[in-house]
Image 1 (spheres, rainbow, N blue to C red):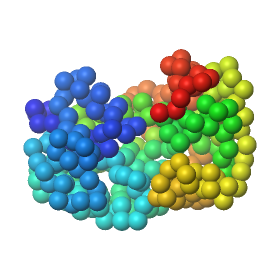
Image 2: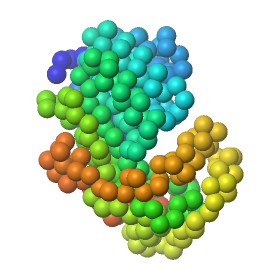
Image 3: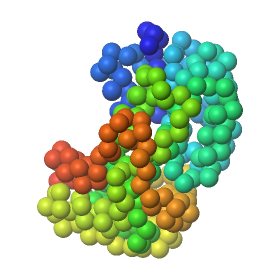
Length: 278
């Protein structure tokens, strides 16, 4: 690696912040790509892209709000081509498992001429502790439009480990890693694991997609509501139920289980009764 920084887009998010922290711990310089960064970056403003890229050695690409959003594939294609033209050829893209729209963005990355790696991840375990599901877990009642469908929830710590390997080590160029946990759980099963880990009574209730969208309307923006509705109505249909060995392929070890995630997270106190969601 050179002394040039690695650009981390979404560097304050679930995966990006962890990638940045791991690189910093290795004394690899990083540049955070966000609106509030010293060199601002915004997906909505293409004029910010080149300044953020110049002088970097590689980039971790997490698209906001999601690769399933309209215009995402075009943005990824334009950004990747710009990066390559500026000499930033090692690009690692965070993608979504089972999302057809996300796969269009993957194709744009492949066409750019970059030394690419794609991390196609399943549903994040950390959505229960760092996202829109934290408040319901704290309240003891989680209501989602998901029945018996199972999902091999992936620990974001594993995603970050794979991303850092792909950004800094040989052997990952041209690889697509499907990243999942080692077993698939239903959402009610995931909540049951959290209940055991915390020693709390946390209930799960299935609701309609209309009820779900209405409940979220006052908490998150309309784009995020639309994305979550898309996930629950189309992507969470069983197509992603089978776990994969992507973490083992990339790192030579097994992925963390949801039970391990639940126990580790419970020990931090984030799910403790009376804890205010941030």
